[in-house]
Image 1 (spheres, rainbow, N blue to C red):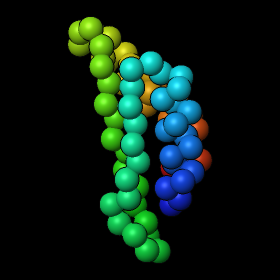
Image 2 (cartoon, helix red, strand yellow; image 1 turned 180 degrees about the horizontal axis):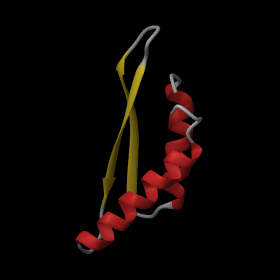
Image 3 (spheres, helix red, strand yellow; image 1 turned 60 degrees about the vertical axis):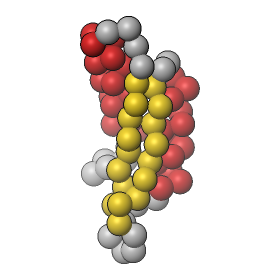
Length: 69
């Protein structure tokens, strides 16, 4: 995916669906071969809860990315 605005839309939707998770996209390279990364921050009451939130967010992002993401 080479469009930061499209990735941002996906991350915004996931943040609304997964409580206490913050997601931010950032381009690491511009130009023809643009590269995008996402930062995920989660808060919770222990490692198990944090892991569950992170995995849920990742799963929802992956489902929304076009094939070949």
